[in-house]
Image (cartoon, rainbow, N blue to C red; front, side):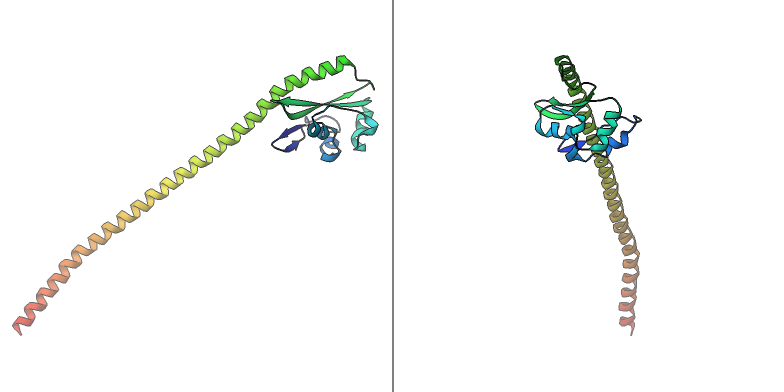
Length: 178
């Protein structure tokens, strides 16, 4: 489980038996969610897990207890490591092993979070570049339209002025002869 920017995410590998059971656990029934919220490890007998379907699956796999350890990065809980133990006792060697794994996971999860943010930022930059290009093309088309109509107006005015001037001269000449 990870906790990124206030969002609790389940990370369940594809393909393990009964994966859908773990994906359907309500957030408030998740021991991992409690670990992330409190920042403390949880050591719970499987019979006491709130989601009974998940507890049954874990019991059928030979588990007795559930250990959820907070994974920290820069003093912040960013994930929870969940282990199913076949004993009802939390031995110091198991705790030491879990702590070591949490240390390794911390760097990996942090890198994954940073990678995802970078990917989103790059996608946003790409969208902005595309919009900037579209805007520049639109402005260029507007400039071309304006120039075209200005030239067209000028091209129509010049012959019309010649025709109108000629008509006025003919009119003045016609009035003088009359």
